Image (tube, rainbow, N blue to C red):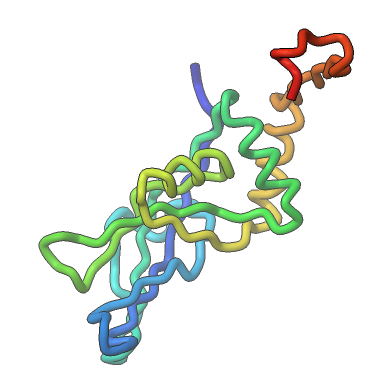
Length: 159
């Protein structure tokens, strides 16, 4: 089954020696739609010795029907975001790379539960419209279950 998808580029900022305990600090600065103009390889945009910016193009963002609830939760939060899971590069601790970009609140929660680094940045209006159209088509809220009054339950089942 063909899944709706877009490509994005992730801008990572690296700060050198932000405090006495860290050699490097990384932050996801921005996620932008990638229409092919950024190339295929990560590249350094600027480095002043203290702060550097790296652009990582070509990351896919795919939408899945079974994640529709997570998309709905993101959209209904009041401030929808991109969730970016990233990792440091073991061979070079001064580098980090994005591994996954998602729009699902639930998927981001699972990644955080797995002890992954996940940052979020505001979602663009164009991407919000794309996500909203998909979510409106596929999200079906769970039907509410009627709770039986305690007087109709066996005493051992009452809480």
